[in-house]
Image (tube, rainbow, N blue to C red; front, side):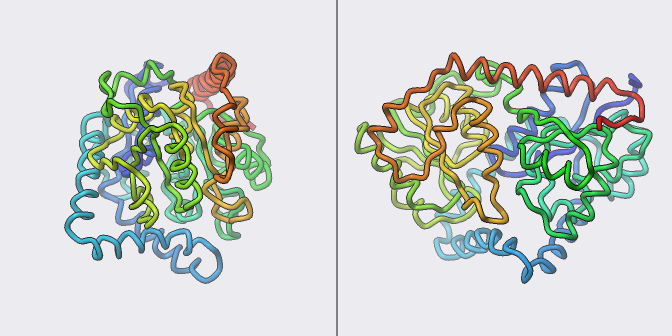
Length: 400
């Protein structure tokens, strides 16, 4: 590898979502740990190009798939801001400020590129490798935007996809056509879930490894570096982190509160405005950034979630957790596969619930974290080996 050049990271470092920002940070951090000079590409100069391409895609897709309906939550959030006015807007601004504080403190960004074309022109001069991952960066809209595809990377530069996800098990035809092209160009491909592995084999004829999400490359103790030792909430509590809008999942948490006597601490209105969120929790803090999110998971007595990353950190902090499926399995926009892969590899498939289960029986189901930690350590070791081998490749071959 050319010592004068850096590794560029392509990630969603700017997304005000706890999982997105923490996995982007973990990707940067693992390269630091391995001793590679790296920086995350600053997209400010061409974010407008990306948004325009995604908008055109969604307009075209609006009447031919369920993608539009998966975005209606964003519309509800806009309407909710107008309905609840100052209070709701102020709360969301408070949370956004915490995300920006984390981004400015922890991310090491590149110089700004005025356009994707400038990035492409400078890529070979500035970088020895470009790594994309993890998160759902190959959703159809992102494929259409043509940034996370790494098509801007010249063949002379090593290209790596680490634990990148399609976010769904089926792609629209146009997305499939585009994917066939970029999947054949990237030298080293790996994915986060088995559905992505099958999709790549179908589209590109490549059998690629399933590796762990970047957040799992570190232990719970290692994640203490960016959070306070002191708990944000002192009394015993049930931490709820729901991204979906299923009332049954909130009802489960309320029944757990009745059974245990512990209060519910919840982060609300995360991916969209959810009416049910306004009624079930005892404490609903908004001044919580990614570091605070980790603290709330670590110090909870119980965790209820439909989130992949909240499940990850529940495992890392050896919590008694209950994870729910956010989507119907027959939904075209379902992201259930990543949860299935995660709990299966950890030997915890029984932690995936519907929401109507008996609380007493759920509490009787104990988690043997000795076994879980051994399984996670094996997956972590395998993933490190894959990543190191991909980073050390200076040739032009692909890992078919």
